Image (cartoon, rainbow, N blue to C red; front, side):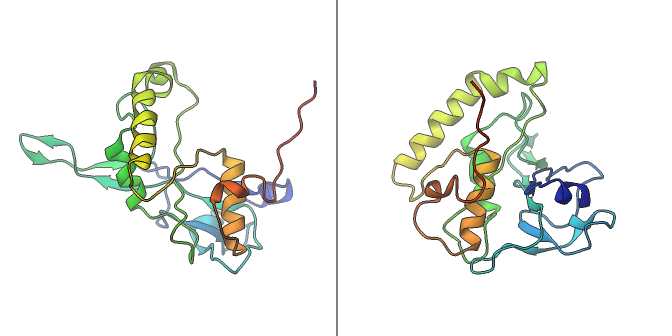
Length: 194
C-alpha cells in the first residue's frame, strides 16, 4: 500500500476477492486504510468515506459487492453461493444479481442516494468472452437500463474506475446533484498523444 501511495495511486480496487484467502473481513465499503501503510495488509481496517470529511489517506479502498446468493436450488433446497461481483460465463450478469449488488449498499456515508457497484472480470479469459461481450452482457445492459427507465426511482451511471473515485471524492466533499457531473472532479483523464 505504501508503494501505491508513494507512486500516486488514488485507489485500490482489488476487493472483493472471496473465496480467496486474500479476502478481508471488512466488506461492502468505501474507505481509507486506518493502519500504517507500511504495515502488512493495512486495508484490513479502515475509516469509511463520509460526506463532509474529505479523505486524507490514499489509496482509497473501493470495494465491489460481496453478498450471498440463495437463488440457486438443488432438489428444491436453496444452495447459497458467493456473489463477489465477478462477471464470468458460469455466473453472468443478470437483473437478479444487480438487485443483490444494490442491496449491498456500498456508499459514502451521508450519501445514501449514491450507490457504488464495482464489477470485475479476469482479464478477458477466453472462456469468459461470451459473458463479457456476448448475449448475456447485451441482455443485462438492455434490461438494467430499461428497469431504471421504468420508474424504479434510480438512475444508472456507467463509469470507469477513475470516474468512480472522482464521484466518491465529490460525495466526501459534500457535492450535490447528479453523480455523473463529477466524473472528472479531481482526477483528470490522461491526454493521449496523436
